[in-house]
Image (cartoon, rainbow, N blue to C red; front, side, top):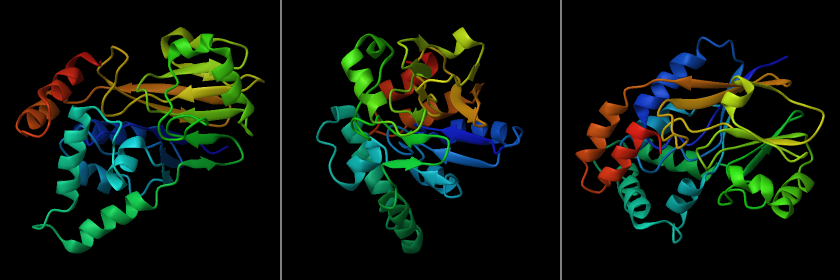
Length: 251
């Protein structure tokens, strides 16, 4: 049975993505899928976009959507980072063909993918790019029931909140540490957040991604040189220093 690696919320963090890709190389996977937010917040949008070109697919995240249209619901720091990212992808000193290729990659991103085993989305099936599914939402039965009712597969993978975990249709939320980092998919519907590569927010500053073989989900944590990423962010006036500080604490 084929094994896939699932990455999400890279956020222009090339140090984190490089470390994760090196870890994936040792995991005997058949393909890599990306659940969106390749860009935004971080200092290396061009490099990170270049590194995901060979993924089986890359989904549209809210940051890519904001880049293509307008992130009117973004906070000022995120909007400033998005505007700076747009400038980087339109760099007049770079190859026009390369600039065009980046924009074509983003424009071609879908909001939803599915195969015979699972659904894949950035946010949720309620709103593919913008809906947040948080741990406390397990208590919101109306919301969770709506998500599960929209599923035509037993498993749906997503990102967006940067907090890994499993939500079950029987009403449980499970953190990766509560399942020993591995979760055997039960005979019920589940939605699974694969965590964030480039900006973890669960109190652990290590990058997070997941592996899936059709039956078992394995959460992986990978250390990376976050201090190098922090230094880059702090040298760019358009990027708030808080975007650097949060990398150290994983929040």
